[in-house]
Amino acid sequence: MSHRDEWQPLLEDLDRRRTAARAMGGPEKVQKTRAAGRLPVRDRVAALLDPGTFVELGVLAGDGAAPADAFVAGSGLIDGRPVLVGAEDFTVAGGSIGTAGATKRARLAALALQERVPLVMMLEGAGHRATNALHPHRPAPNDLQAMVDLAGLVPTVAVVTGPSAGHGALTAPLSDHVIMVAGQGALFTAGPPLVKASLGEVVDKETLGGASVHGTHSGVAHEVVADVRSALAAVRRWLSYLPSNAWEHPPHVPGVDTGPRSVDALLDLIPPNSRQPYDMRAVLTELFDAGSVTESQPDHGASVITALARLGGDPVAVVANQPAVLAGAIDAPAAEKAARFVERAAAFHLPLVQLADNPGVLAGSASERAGILRAGARMFAAQHRARVPKLHVTLRKAFGFGSSVMGQNAFGGQTVSLALPGVTLGGIPAAVGGATAKADDATRASLVENENAGPWRLASTATYDDVVDPRELRDALLAALRLSRRSGTPEPVSRVGYLP
Image (cartoon, rainbow, N blue to C red):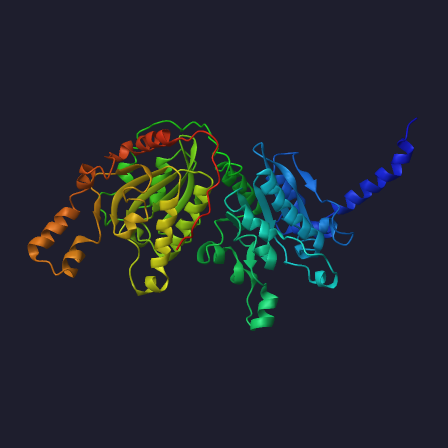
């Protein structure tokens, strides 16, 4: 006996409810979103994931007035690997967080830890819904608590595709990587209307918390891109460098440019004269696998470059001084940026490549007021305690604490420590040091001569493992990475002690 006729009304009701839940803010609002050059929430999720892999979670949450409760959530695949994704829907109640939406957010973050998979959050909402206060609800964990617990265990990404305020905006600084869409994405603790009401300040959303604010000044954003599709491609690219969780090694990606080779171009790119600036980005492009360098926070703390790259197909984290900015001197924003970058890279077992070419940490009253001592100490502590393979190269110069924060110290856990010929080293520049110490002419001359003597004294004591021809540098780094390749199952980094 068939029961199909009895099932029919139940299935029709289910289909009706699903259709209503997937309607977003309705045809008019969805079309308005597209006309503004943005992608509706479900198109965003589909464009992020491998085709046809999205499985929704909580589609029936909320009610008819708030389809999916303004938050589309579920799982899917990126390059064949599982991820969880949640996306605020600005076409429904301004993307605000309702009670059911809050539950879905917490559920996603808990699942990310339980299943040990990355979490991607797309932000364009108004924070907690004002009407939540009119309805009692039981105490429950929230997603921000869970996001804190995810740190260093699974990769987390926030993509800011529209204005995001309050609770939702806090997802960004709690994430490992933040991508903002220029001209569309914005982050703030409170939006322009609340700022005007509480402070009397009249400000637009771009000036208050747009991509230029967080990409350059605050340092909350790691990447700023031109449009939503570029943002989604950036998510996929960033995740490709990382393991799915801290219990796995980073993925090896074979390519056409993964083998040994001479890097002849470095002779043209790096001037031997340490006072002459050059662009370190060009060096990275030549040194690492073709097309593999992805910079993080390029406009914030710009005297230090932080980037993910591949070396012989293996992902690495790169911290490099930028002689084209402040002669490579490390200021407080650069040191803070580098410390955070190293902590996250070490949590996911990426080898650390440190390329030093700096006159030290930035001196001066403005730098001291900005907190360079604490920031520099934090950078030093982060790179010292990183328990990953560490490959150090002094390219031209490294003075004082500027050498230490870049891993030039012996017994810092380096797999290899290298120098190029002609490097200049010292506690402080010799001429300044001699004058400060009121040394006689002979002593001053000896100090200058010692500074100009290159890396040979440190090489003679095996402080440097080798001095290499610039053209040999890639092969030397490949050999060190081969030595340090780890086997077995890694473990998450233990959270012991604290940083300055």
